[in-house]
Length: 240
Image 1 (cartoon, helix red, strand yellow):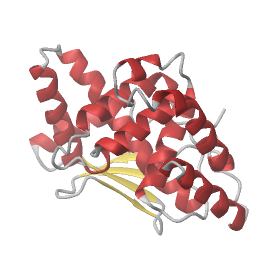
Image 2 (tube, one colour):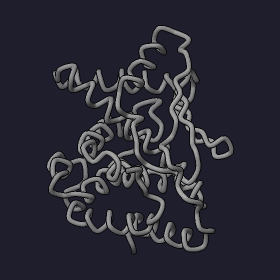
Image 3 (cartoon, helix red, strand yellow):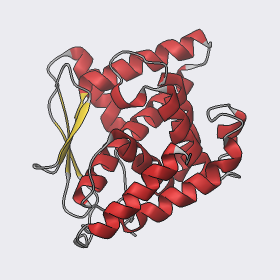
Image 4 (tube, helix red, strand yellow):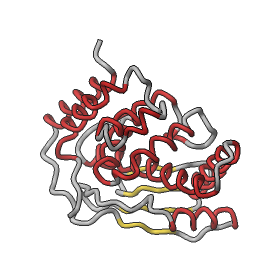
């Protein structure tokens, strides 16, 4: 039986072959807007997100996309294909910050480790939403697994220096921490880590050494990455 990721790659390749040729990528990365926060906690989350590098990207999309950060309790983030808008909620940033701070304190790591982990987790989460945008704007259906695969591919292309931190942060959050949406799930985390490791096994060796991808799977990760990258093909493009 083929690996689930291989089946996903074949599905992506088939859909891309059947879909109309995408329009030329937009010349600019997504525009980002931060709305006012309605509480002290939300304001802290707004500041953390704005001061991080998580929303910095050179990934080009088939048409203009807006990223909006705002108060929206009860949600984490969403891609709206009709409005071409990614929404990121301050409540999710707050939950992620408190969760990673708690994990770092338990490990007796310093505050800088928690800050690095938060920036990496936010980067992974943002690229997941970019994955939704790329898939739907490229004429594909929109399953979570596909968005996750595209997230790893865009992050590896766009922010290679964040590959190891993003794999670690997602591994830490994978065990079903409440309110963290698409970053939960140990199997999903392992696939995300495998693709990032496979993108550059030498530079990202810490992913395998850290055990964030199962040891028996690590040797196949370069092939999994190449297969997924070939299937995604023209969807992954960066501004100069």
